[in-house]
Length: 127
Image (cartoon, rainbow, N blue to C red; front, side, top):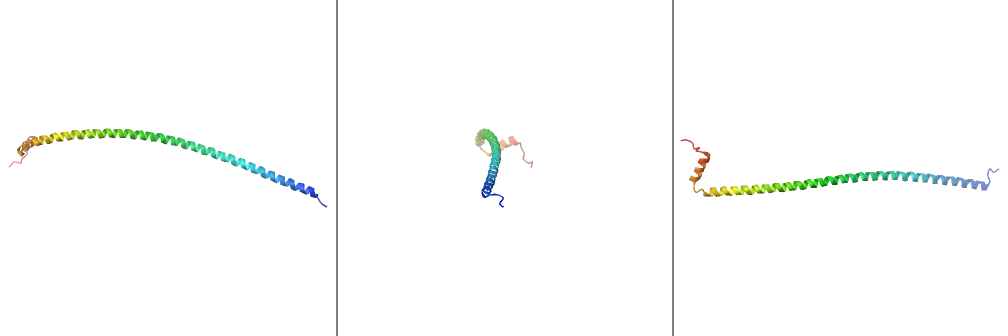
């Protein structure tokens, strides 16, 4: 006694195969959608991080500009200080030259002794 005929068996095999393929298709579709939404979420977070990096880069560029400005100001100040030093050097050289002229006019040791006596006083030890 057969429970099912041969055509009924083939119909049952076809129904089972259809159900299995349909289930696999459903699971594949759901998994694909889940992965796609997760990947989109990660891409959104990466875009957010890129935006923050761009913001930090802009701030660094601003600080770099400020540093360059301060560097230019410092360079200008140093040029001014160097010019003042050169002016003082010239003034001191002129004074030294005038002293050289005065010293050159002293003719003898007696003139030098008289100048020393006038400037420092008579400090010879008493004998």
